[in-house]
Image (cartoon, rainbow over all chains, first blue to last red; front, side, top):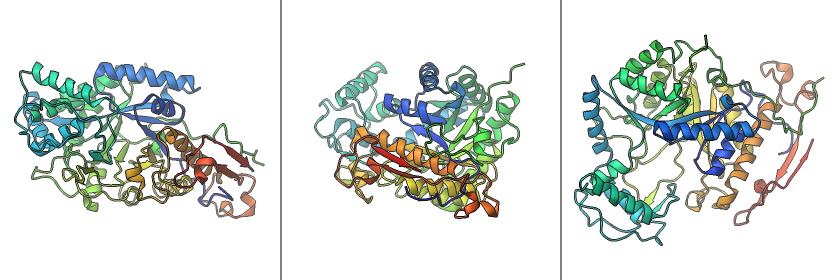
Length: 260
Length: 214
């Protein structure tokens, strides 16, 4: 860079920094640098382990635990009752993973053309082609050995009484999902936060653009009643609303001069 | 009494990947501004901290064809967020922006501008993908070795921080406008040159060989 920066200092100084990536290097980068980490660690127990790990890393980088927010991605399905929501969640998963999608998922693991297989039939008996790593281009690759993943899927299918390809993909690719009545979902989200499995969530609705409507109308008031969600915005910036400390000039900023 | 821990909420705009259901009669456009505005206003009505946009720089290909199970097309993040700044007042605006293929100085300008337009609501979700398939459409191509991703990301953040915090602290004051000599003491100029900012396509970037001069 040369010369003076061409935009005056903005209200936050720099944007709130979110880091996505679960590798050890990614975690360390987040612990040293980010204000929030977007993770996929889903279950309550896995969340608590991840939370302790990255907050500990932040402290080792000279930061406070609360300087780094842990925000897992999560889906949700709401219903009038828990049973109603459970039924709807099954429908949503079947809509998300149709026969074609199931075969495409399978091909990404197996590294082979599996278009001749029936999505309602059993998993292929043949093993993954581990040399064909480029069957799908432009997506984040699984770092794990596809043969290991394939075996896990076979074990899963067998353990559940002989799942079809589509059923296996639905089971194996499920993310953390909060399913139930508004009250149930609010209680469960809050349990994660109060129990230090995370600091909040990045919610991923399954419908655009109205996928958040019911959540805002029904779950948000429940969270507010529990005293866990604001009833008005109190900060003037995103950083303030997130409870983060104001932006300082970087401590390592060798360009800093003492102001007159 | 200890204050109860507050839940932080981000709202991921749905539109790509197979998590979005398109067979539902209520499914609408993933690209019309009305869709973004509706989603953002709902998040703000629900006191969410921020709206979150993912990024799609190149359509995925599967067995040599466009992955037709993906939605075709995703608009530019900065443009959408800037438009949303005008229809919201409190909601944070988080954009997923790749640290490898974008130039740090350009990103610093874009985020500083978004932060101004939104009065302090900009957020950057940093992703470090470096695959050559995606890089093909960028000026330097697939130039970065996978193990150098975070070196490059650190550099992007560093430039963003230095530039963002180097300016006058009272940007609304006409006397503090860039180029005005009276602002010099509070806004030092600097020259930074890093290896991965200046390397050319095909070369391998070395970590943080830097020369900083003020």
